[in-house]
Image (cartoon, rainbow, N blue to C red; front, side, top):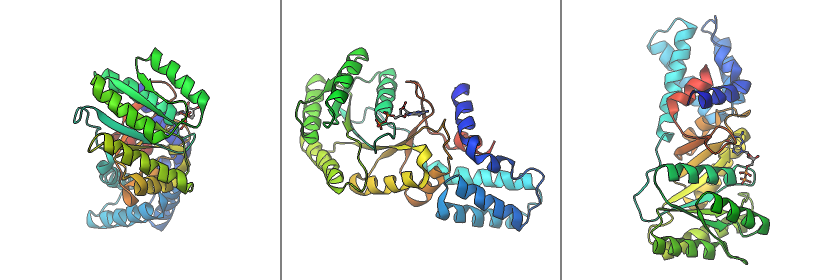
Length: 298
Ligand code: GDP
């Protein structure tokens, strides 16, 4: 536990070090607010969240008559926690049999890695897992997935030639027959600008819903925490297409700037179920607003 927090801290502090040092020995004046504004923008918090945080902070400083920069930092910590807390929501298992999840994202976001981590996490919670290989574009990917599934005790449903919606539909039927707890439907990486592929995602959702009413229960988006405002644009586009139920933010151990979560909270508050803090299978952690803010500010 401690080791992943330190990795998260190390990752965030590479780019947000001014957020951590800014308050040391500072006076509460316009220069401090200007520096804070730049630091928040550099951390990828975006214009809207930055503006909101600055105004709320100034008001707090005035209302509470704060005189020390360290108090301002404490006030900022509280505001950030309040902002991010609504994103903290655990993924609830066992509501449906099977619980059907659909997982989307752009290429390179960390989708494949995350599916492996998630399968492991689910198994650790006594859930049996079936994976639908909905990335029907790459034959090699399909083969690799089959090998991975065998090794990890995960049944993988795939089809030679394929319509991803049909693969997903089959997987749900198969999971019902086998009484599997969770179906994870992988989808091919796609960009929000590839409109036909975004339509394909909606079709997967529709067809799955024909096989099991109310499914897919979870519609998850994997985003790379390093991509800042681009990740925010992805959240908006995929949410418009699928009405997302959750996000997984990867690579927060790298050079991620962290502030993108503030931008998401302010503009499109989709819950963050998990954060990725490394390449290894165990490097998936539930999102905790307080832990995250402390890593960002310390
Ligand atoms: P996909 O194209 O979305 O399926 O992405 P992959 O799962 O293949 O991941 C792309 C790269 O990101 C790989 O090198 C992964 O090891 C790496 N990666 C994924 N998640 C994390 C993470 O949380 N931390 C770090 N450091 N690397 C990650």
